[in-house]
Figure 1 (cartoon, each protein chain N blue to C red):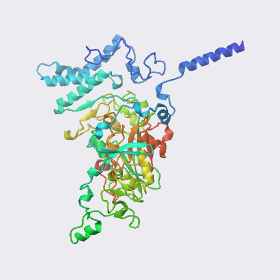
Figure 2 (cartoon, chains in turn yellow, brown; figure 1 turned 180 degrees about the vertical axis):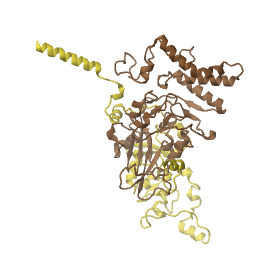
Figure 3 (spheres, helix red, strand yellow; figure 1 turned 30 degrees about the horizontal axis):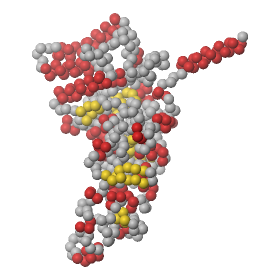
Figure 4 (tube, rainbow over the protein chains, first blue to last red; figure 1 turned 120 degrees about the vertical axis):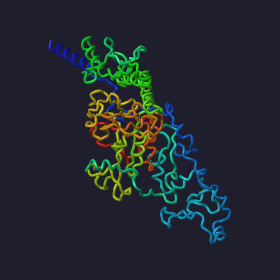
Length: 209
Length: 350
């Protein structure tokens, strides 16, 4: 008799559970991290694209360590490239020829590491002005100047490849287009400068008095 | 609600008001036994007897009487007739959540036309729905932000925010090094050269929580979370009670204390119904991750304006997106995580 009663009670409890249990989509996951993990899709299935927003930017491809994205092309953005149009002779010779005249690149002052670490020739090549060179003297194309920066700034390079450093252009949707180092940092003076904020709320000051 | 013959909102006296937009997520079966009806449902989901229906309709008629008198008048011009027609239809339209796609297009057309009648200028308003397989998330690098506030300006311009009260969605807090995230002692309206020595900068805005308390408290269901994770407001359904403002633990919501003023030449004409369309006095508004941009694949205005790359926006469901890399490889945290609001806005450091 008692077992029957217990059984009946159990069935009722189970039935109640089934009926009352809420299975709405809203609370399917314990946290948003679980949701992200469970609902992640394969990138091929994504339909949104940001191509239209980047149409006007000439790009080259970055491909390294399994990362693949676009970066802005650089050479066409440098005024008076190719450099060899002026740099027809070695620097010393050019200097001798132009004694007394206004120096070329007078406006460039190197403020990047100290003079013990870097000077013009750390990156630029006297005999081959149209290209840069690495610490071990291998040639680096101006379009891929990140190879030069990454020799020292390895943590930044790692973050940039992943997407935690630097700025994504156009849209969030693929294909990814990220600024390369020199799009944000002036290589001759890479630190961001102090300046005034672009906004000050005078109304807010009054209200808070 | 989309019968061709119907020109205005009806109470659906004998029909069930259920559409596929039902909150329980299932299209079949009944979901009424899941939770007790409250607020909005109590009013909209009851079958009504003739007498009380008449009472309610009469109340509506009284308010709409002005519109009728001018729209039926023989003396007023075609334009003013059209105007009052639009006003009538707008007054009786339903909650955006219950609208069919047709209804959405119709109200967008009405709002566009009404703007044209008022100013003679055309706007481009969209009612684009969330894309499949997209969940938006945001990351903010506190080591990189320099406090320039370019994002704030971009946001004000993009989202047609009121210029006179300086109401802004984004706040940049200047915090002193070594004091932690001390919002009480931080300054969000500094004016000196930045970055100031010994300080760091932290931006806040709506975090688009996955479990948003502001949505829970809304008595009229004028705010909700879209499928792509954006928490939106139907400005025409909001009654301005500001419950949501009190419920938000992040100070992410703003209220229009007066009619917002945006100089005509500065109005951003690319608009979304749930985003940057012009608001009115007495309604809530907040960051929508620039819904008019992000649903098209574009970055929000703040991300685009930031010169330091502190701001990252992307699809959390795309394993190759920048934001996913940040979540998986950097030491990220969110504000007031213990509240269980599950914000989709992460902070990280270099």
